[in-house]
Amino acid sequence: MTKQEATRVRIVVDHDRCMGHAQCVIVAPDLFKLDALGVVEVLSEFPEDSQRDGLDLAVEHCPEEIIRIERVSAE
Image (cartoon, rainbow, N blue to C red):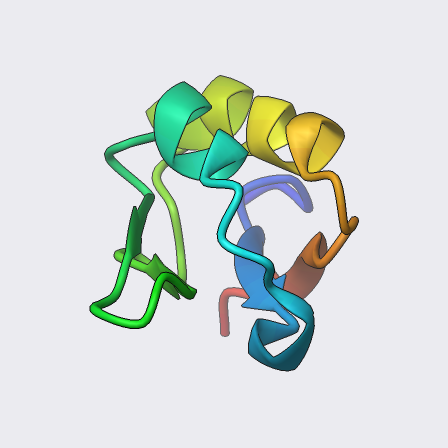
């Protein structure tokens, strides 16, 4: 197993600061949705590699900058 294979990413969101603009939902609907109160929910805390482009766009487009990517060991 290579070092890259041993590292995964985890989506971390500061829900208290979410203003419900839904930009993350627009660019990555397979990863995010808004709950009944209009606050972002993460659908998959540990996204697949194929979802990485959408995740990067969500981070980039969030007006409050509340979405971050955390690297975690796969072990």
